[in-house]
Every structure is written in C-alpha cells, then in structure tokens.
Length: 233
Image (tube, rainbow, N blue to C red; front, side, top):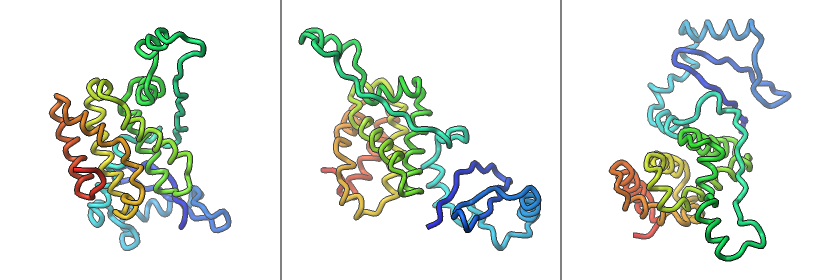
C-alpha cells in the first residue's frame, strides 16, 4: 500500500504530485511539469485518466465529506493535544477534596474543549475527525489512534451536565460517530466492543435532554448501534 498525502483541493482546481520510486512517496513536481499537467487536466486532455469524484463516486465522496466536515486546510498539520488528568493536590482534607471537585476539577471532555480548544466545538470536532482519518488512512499512526481513542471516551464520560451545556456539540458528534463506525466491518465492530463501553450512558443522557436536535441525532445513533447488536435493546 502506497502512503498518500494530505491536500486541500478546491472545485475546478488541480494538484500535481510525482511519485518518487526511491523514496516511496509523492513529491512536488518541477514547475515545468506542474504547468504542463495542470494545463492538460484543466483542458480535458486527461479526461480518460481522471476520475470525476462527484459523478462516479457520489456515495464515497459524500461519506468522506462527512468524515472530514470540520477539518480545514490550516489544521492538516495539527499536532494533537494531550491533556493531563486533573488530580487533587496531596494532603488535602476530605472536605477540601470535595470542594476541589466542585470548584476546580475538569473532566477530560472539559479539558479538551475549554483548555485545548478554547471553547471552540468546531475545533475540537476537527481534531477528533483528523485523528480518526489519519489512523484509518495511514494505518500505523499510533499517535492519531491514541488521540481519537482518548477523545472518544472523554465524550462518552462527559456526563449529563456537559451534555446539557453543549447540546450542539453532541448532536454533531452523533453524526460523526455514525460515519466513523460505518468505516468498519461488522466483524471488526463486534470483535472490538470495547469501543462502545459507556456509549449507552451518553445516549441515555442525550435522549433525556430537552434539545430536539440532540434527541433526534442520539436516537439515530442508538438505532444504528442496535441494528448491528452493538448495544443492548
């Protein structure tokens, strides 16, 4: 399998890359090569060799768009964040620890959203998507997988308060999870049921939420998982 490359392609534009056999990767072409093949591609001279994505692969293209819907060009080189779990200072009295958890402690979800991403749900969802697609595309990117896995369970364990405070985030998350889980075979999903440990509690909290959009998306996610017997009835 040849490792690909990240690019951001606008409609009616062309990106030219050359495969280097010695280095086993795609590299930038010379200016002359880029100019020649760009003209050929835009003029229609290469139509037989090019695939019009939206015309021939509509389903796959839409699936990819949903998998990467929050990722922007400037985020492609993102170095994944890594939050440090919060623990109470040593030698605290029991009543002080209780007060610390009420006033100071942040969950993994709150740390990711408010500390790493400064409260931007779009930025956090983009990192979640980027970690996932880097993992499934490159296969060997353990850093990407570990970040995706960490965020996945941070979302599962966010708690009712965080869900009630961020209904838009979790409504969008549900749609992303359906697209991500759809990338796997049923055998893989059933063999790796640890991916769904705790998701039922998150869904229950979302369905009980008063936000209509969140309830609808959580019911959709719930139906998807139940159809494949990934969670209980």
